[in-house]
Image (cartoon, rainbow, N blue to C red):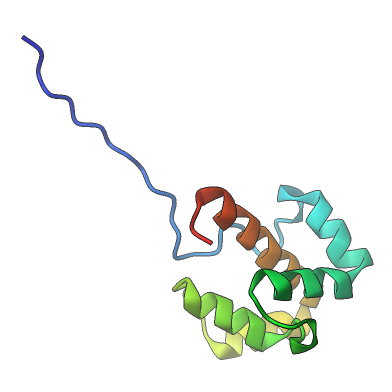
Length: 106
């Protein structure tokens, strides 16, 4: 006789950022694009989110994304992150979109 087996399926944590703010080495292509062609990456991210390129890459875009996926944070945190490290913030957002697409949750 065989006993029923329980299989534990570990789901990735989807209510946090998939990479850290300074994890540029996780995706060097995104990092290079964010540094050398910030506006192009901003338009790509806006397009991924169904927004117009003219919406910008600022705090609002980050706050909308964070709210949609239940990522902890605040508007003050979003503002400071985008103000002090705009390229890192945009790259983190793009990496997160890519990872969520791979997981099938975007």
